[in-house]
Length: 216
Ligand code: ADP
Ligand code: ADP
Ligand code: ZN
Image (cartoon, rainbow, N blue to C red; front, side, top):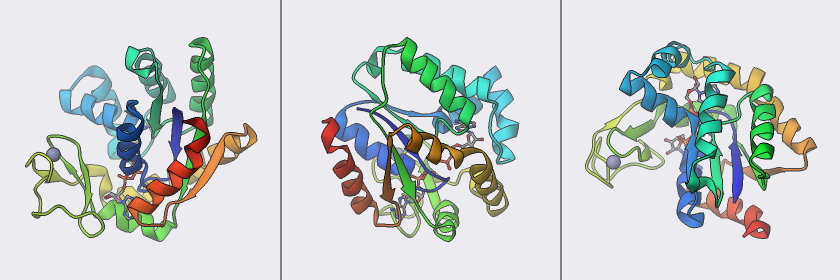
């Protein structure tokens, strides 16, 4: 199962990736998670990425392409992988195609999650993430049992710095300009499968699995 989850910020890529990794036993490769990890560690890559992320812009292609290239070569990717948040530009998509072909791998499908813009802002503004285990929540749509506390590990739920209203708007504009062309890119490659991302979380999951039946 070699997949890309494509969609604007807040579309539900991370949420559905968590379901898919359980189901197929393949790793989730989230460039956002890897970059936030690097920022937290204070590594040189993290220091370089932080200013772009805080501003709601994209980290330079060569940085993220390098991350994914390295990650895809790890043995746990032999059975497949779920790319979440990568590629985000046409040059990234071209680089991915080159990397996969040199590894002798092919993408099975690109799942495009379609969500209205107004819904995205509400999703991002209410998004919370566990500081310890990374589990995702939403204050209204996917609330934890106890406010501010992770159901899975008891960790503290935090709001991402870039999930503030002003940065959200900037990220949407960046998506429209730089990432949305990938919908046609993958449609032309014959890989695109669209899914209605406005449905409740479980129903989006069912719709994705229905699209993937041929690859199991
Ligand atoms: P979201 O899930 O809200 O779409 P991510 O967690 O995927 O956000 O990404 C957070 C930030 O990390 C992005 O706004 C961007 O600055 C950076 N980032 C993540 N993936 C990429 C990528 N493929 N290319 C460039 N920047 C990226
Ligand atoms: P992305 O990774 O695409 O940026 P997330 O998976 O982090 O998006 O989802 C953004 C927020 O919206 C999270 O708080 C999540 O709980 C919530 N969410 C995800 N999918 C849905 C859905 N289908 N309906 C309502 N809320 C959702
Ligand atoms: Zn947790």
